[in-house]
Amino acid sequence: MVDPRQGFLLVVLSPEALGAMMQQMRYGEHYRVFLAPALVIGIYLTWAGFTAPAARER
Image (tube, rainbow, N blue to C red):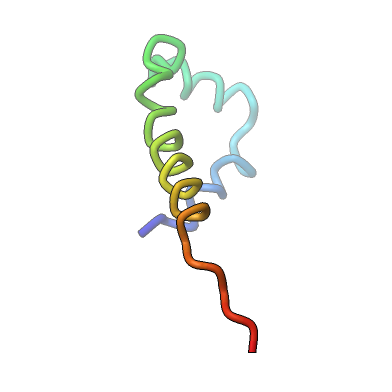
């Protein structure tokens, strides 16, 4: 389960602190690793949405 406090860091940290954190994580070198989960989830949700049976009207 996703921790709801993760988004809180974006609100509380300064842009300089976020930049330093990205540098420490080497985001520029490993961006594909960080984007891969979002891509996989997006592809799955798209597939699931188009293959789901239509809702029946009453």
